[in-house]
Image (cartoon, rainbow, N blue to C red; front, side, top):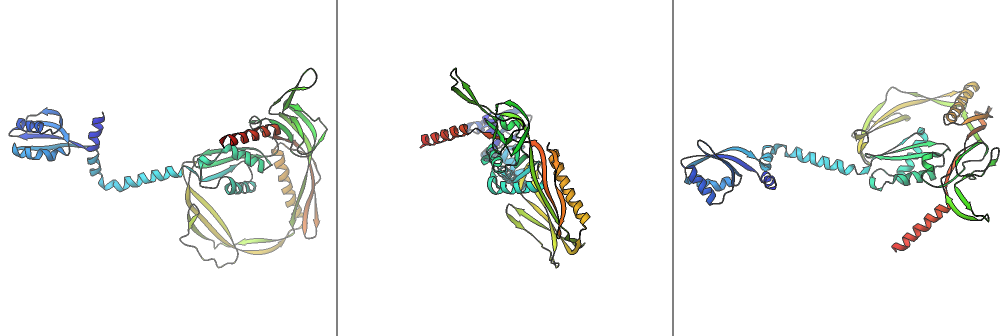
Length: 414
């Protein structure tokens, strides 16, 4: 098998020799150690396989015996390359393209956030790309578990977060609120603590020791359900201490301050139909704009649509193009009536209440009032709500043990 592969790499031919003295020619070939194989007798002479370089060695013996040689078939890589020599540049370019794709696949070129409103998502995305995972980070340097933990500590409003690294894209799924998910509680041992000041209305304990009761007032950070289990001996002394992940549901009544305003005088934009567009090509942080139109108007809105190059759904590439549209506008001064301004503020408040309801929060009392103050209409007051107030906190004793273990490992390495 190895010999056949070597022959294919070097190239060989199938030939037929015919003429006056075929037997004498074959004797000379054997005598001079010219390698041939699969020799077959034909009506005119012999047919056999031999290396492509052996054709030159046979030339003097063909002349000496007055024989002729006919090449019937050319086999091997040298002949394949020769037949396709006009396509070498294409094959080479395709090979370089594949190598480039493989190298680019080792990095993160897209970070997406799923499960939050656009404003929060944009702020969170900016923070991630600035501090944790800048675009162009090696995928092997991205630790999803560590990223989840860091974001959960930095953004207290996040109740559940999950990171997924697929292709060249990093997708972050999150939910905003206070209720921790069971998946998070199972990862670590610790306590369920109050996420905010509240009066407890309902409490269900599944794992751990409850430390508070219904109708009790609690402060933010107070332990609601302890994950520390004490085992006592006959003398009521602590015999053993174990740690578990506290699990349960705790609901309480909280107050949320609400304030919003709107100016009665405002400026309305009148956009022109004379919009201009241009395209910018980018590779990483480098941008090239072949043509930028001149804008004579002083005021105009700019809308940019970014189109990233990608293969399939999750294989993003660090280049693409941006389509920018500039639309001139003029400002027209207008004024809301008191009724119109109040309706706008009420609509915003209704959206806030709807967002609470979608997250399982019950609005008990609405004390928000809308009043005019000077040239503004102000909505201000308090929402009394009933919601889950649980937040998970890893047991401090476990954290202390981990820190001591890490210090011990560092000392051993030193």
